[in-house]
Image 1 (cartoon, rainbow over the protein chains, first blue to last red):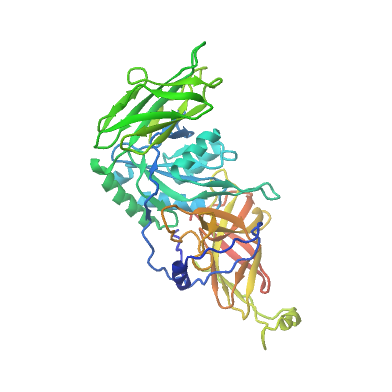
Image 2 (cartoon, rainbow over the protein chains, first blue to last red):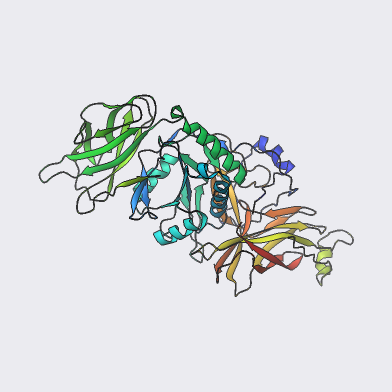
Length: 344
Length: 172
């Protein structure tokens, strides 16, 4: 049923003040003042929030545990479509079910042609308790065909959360072993360029979410409404015996209408001495460009230690126009070839 | 549907109440509860949330201090609050405005969820337990709660005593 979030008169006044209170004492067990629930709903701001800094996630993805067979889901949509991402966890009894129920109700308000252009993905911020099975069932309750994204790789999880600007804090367990996970709550619609152009605050009515979806769909239907570089099929081959050079490969897709260029790559100290891009890589509009064997070469030289197959190496890519992005390159070999990607 | 239960005043605690200095005839305690509902179970999960509006019709501040469901329905119930927090500090717009708060700048709020020992009910005021704000957190649900079912919820108030309401299970 619809939830009415009341904004009391006192609230409107206090918005201007925007005071920060001191938090309750550490245990958070103080009684809190109740609100004046006068019940009237004053006009509320539009749910759109423009990310600053920009949210650019087209180089990233997460394992999709609802895919058969399992595959990574890249954070980008097909042209003209949206992938709406929410970060939450299944042991969250209030915020997450509400956000997902509202989004589900919103998609039900769309016309079939509109709904077909919207995919949903839930990223768990609590992979310890949210096993693939738990997550699949949970997501399936709210949506048909939504993606359940989950990883045990903490480095990958943090890279994704950082790219979306999502902050996550696991709180200490209570005496029953239960714990809360504080997390940024918002809907992140990702477009074909791997960009989140606007974020939608949770707490909106389903009808507001639906209208926001329609507006954004209209924008991304226009080719000029989408920009960004998407990375697909990234892979890092470990150095052959006797060598300390690892060879990278990936496909870069320029989803925008303006030409761009890959200008550089960097790797973290401690992983390898240097990332070497053989030259700039031209990225013509709305086209793919191959990096690695078959295209401009990208290698990591002076690799430290052993690259474990299945692990991921962060490589920072810089572009002439688009913002830099970090791709978490899966290390190939050892029988654990990186799985093929599916797009949202 | 509205479920309204009114608890009449006088109790054996009259002496205590009088001592509280509530003024003459100041021993009327009343809490009305409207619109109690519980979110229907999500497959695989044995926890859920309950919501309602509490109206203090008494003549002094009261406080919701506990809640429980029948032991055959759920193991335990706590009172919790979801709070929108910006930049690491609670941002209050009014008293602890919850998920609907506007945010300054371009960072969505972090939702914190914390247990509280009680919810204060100012005299003559209504307080909502609603999605994104105060809620009952219900643990150890024994059987999936399906939409349409009615569940008895016992609410305990510091002054008004125990109030039992019938909550409706909804898909929310």
